[in-house]
Amino acid sequence: MAARVLVLSSILTFSCFAEICYGAVSFSSLERTLVVTASHRQGLLLAGEDKITVAWGLNQSFPAGTDSTYRTIKVQLCYAPISQVDRAWRKTEDHLSKDKTCQFKIVEKPYSNTNETLEWTIERDVPTATFFVRAYALDQHNNKVAYGQNTDAKKTTNLFDIQAITGRHASLDIASVCFSAFSVVSLIGFFFAEKRKGGKGQQ
Image (cartoon, rainbow, N blue to C red):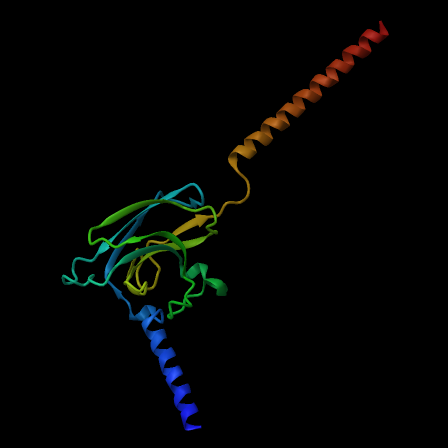
């Protein structure tokens, strides 16, 4: 019995240790060492059409060596609090493995200690919502070890709105108008042709 308890305790301890070492990271434990900006045109942005220019880099106010464990940068498009209300599938969790704030990857690439910039076209599957941009620094085990974002801690500044694709496209609308116009012209032409035939028949 004692041996069984010892084995179970060992397994539980190992599992907890593995969880701590690999992936059980809380957002509140991360240091905000990255500076992130996102620039775009003014007004409502359109999925599949508009672009966002994202820039990121290490905050130079931190001491040298702060980024010594950084191996990868992952930049993501994230839901603002206003677009998370009553939407459990977008809910923010401190435990990052359960967090659903950032669901759209902008780029993932090897870390560089120089400032980097990327122009990203908003993907077509992005839904209508209010967003911000966040970048995570990952270590050699792909654990998130630091972050930065283009908004404040409460996620209320520098937000932007994206409109999802509605299913209609400008080219389809133009084609529809042209087809309607052609139908009207054809109907008028058919009417006059029939009228002319009727007039000849009476002569």
